[in-house]
Image (tube, rainbow, N blue to C red; front, side):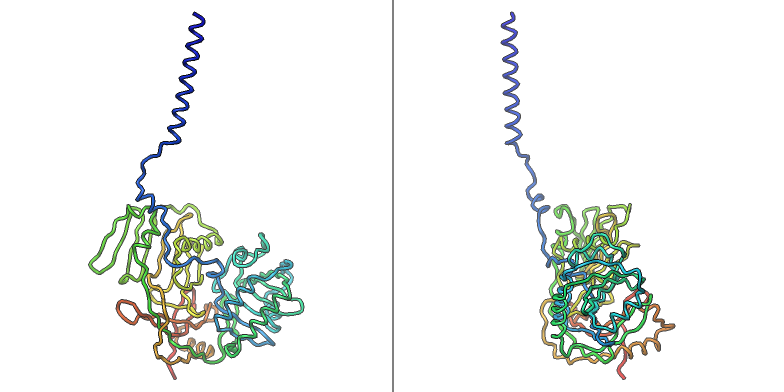
Length: 432
């Protein structure tokens, strides 16, 4: 009886081993039947344009060379692009927080000596510097900056300065880097224009040309981003998206949560993703970096763009189209990429579906734009209660114009633009 019991235990044990082997084999060999069409779409990599590095999008809007008490604007973008990358690649030798000197005193020293000033269009969180230049420090003693100076002297240094307050840090740099900067500035030649400075909003110094500036209108052929590519890039499951067409030629796509609208004769898009509730706001550094990466995710940089504004209050970031180093504006936002965020996802994404392709000869002559002094004189005459305390920027740029109803050709016309009381606006000065 005992032998039968032992034999039964052995049989049960053998059956359990065989069952275990069978289950293991089943797990290894069984593959569920997925919808490979949907799976392929979800893994699909959509490429609309290009990816960009942070320091290709977060760039200065002006380059000013100070020498002997004079200010010179550097206007050739092939020079300024090289200068920017040289400055971002300098070897930092040390770190010093300047709490014993006023900003005005420091700026006077830099302006009256020899220095290169990089002017950014918006205050940047100081930690952004670790993404656009060689990382030198993870914890900084200032919160933000909007100017970078390279002091060209026997003891060269790079300064990060916030013009809205008396904050600055000093980073001594290698003399060899300064020689590279001097060599590049020496290549500027006749495009180095004499500028003058004024004290404007929050005491920041603005630079305007002393003389008239000549610029030629430019004409480009254009291409459109196909709406289906945008749809595939923005929706998690493009196969589950419904498409609607309106009589006016506009289109919309929705997956019952997100919505994508193709507007203005298929030249603009608006994408809204309202699924997330705003529980917390992104910090400035994360807001800016995630906004660049969001466009990188679908290789969405179709032209040259610059970070021109961000707002923590409404969690928004705006990039501006650039041509030859000049910002390009349009009253309906056709030259901007706008993002707003809720938690860690894009809530709204607006941008143009038009990108500039090839420059063509338009036979137009150069336009002579008024000097900076003429601009200021005109503003005091036509703008009610004009005040320098509300003036944030005064720049020469372009305005885009379509040459035909289909927007297959576009011309950009040079003009003056100002940022006044938080808003960019065109200033049309009549010929005298």
